[in-house]
Length: 161
Image: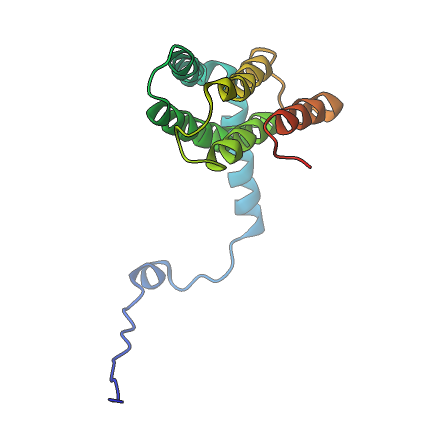
């Protein structure tokens, strides 16, 4: 067995040099930054900004319902839901994030395009739930209603025991 030799490269950390090796962020500055970020988040109306995505989701669902090639539309639905999951979490709509996560978990459970056409009802239910949450601006913790929506979606998609 031949002995291997290697060299460990430790490149200089230019950013650390520029910043001066700061190891702790000032708590007051951090609080101000978080406050500024929250002000921006509060000005964003996710029910408005996601309208193009919801239209695109509905178009994909309609195309699958009409017999279009399923795989490409499922991949597009997955990508949109992935974005909505992040947007929901970041902009105060945890229920949007949970619905999108449920949808992507369902889509991830089988190869794109391998489901029966009747499975479109599960996808449609997720899209309809999203539309309802956004139309009614169910922001923040939604309590019992949010739990019922998510548990219902998990039940119909077979993701819960």
